Image (cartoon, rainbow, N blue to C red):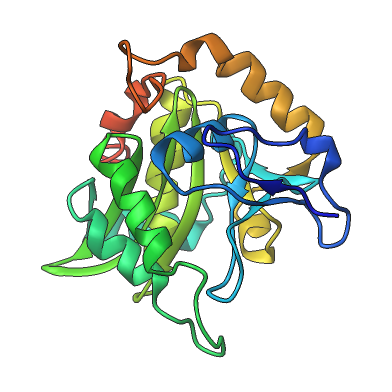
Length: 248
């Protein structure tokens, strides 16, 4: 039986208990508060559910990840980066990015980024934990992505593109900034052929969580002050390099 999370504080089962089918389903219930989400990601767990479901928590095995230095910058994308007239910013329009990512995709009936999920990540953004990368062409927002930054790890959530390669340009800037400034890993959660073509690869869940234990030790997530409801999150200095990652 799937564990039901009813504790007032985040208390997740060991990820080794996650189901094989569907791959990675670990528990149901809990909250989408910043405290629950930060503790979940720190342990290699993320929420994903539809409107008719309770909150469902996942930790798939294997885990799809992208080492920043392994991002595949193909010739056509490099040309767009140089000559496409795109402008990349950081955290300038988080709300529009998450709403664009939540829009139904062609051929898909709906979206998992429901209003409750949007509100949860907007709260994380207000706390400086969730971040957006925006790609504009002229005055038009044409692509971007969002996710959580914790120390040397970026936990990617979703991306969108309304112009050719716009989301790839956002990911390219993220990967370059991390590679050049101490970032270690981009979590892509689950396999897609699109991410695989960009250089992402599967690793064992145990290996992924081992990286989190090494780079994001539990002691780094102690409350910032007595009574704080949100744990402190290790800084990610590579974030500041994202807008100018390809300016050199």
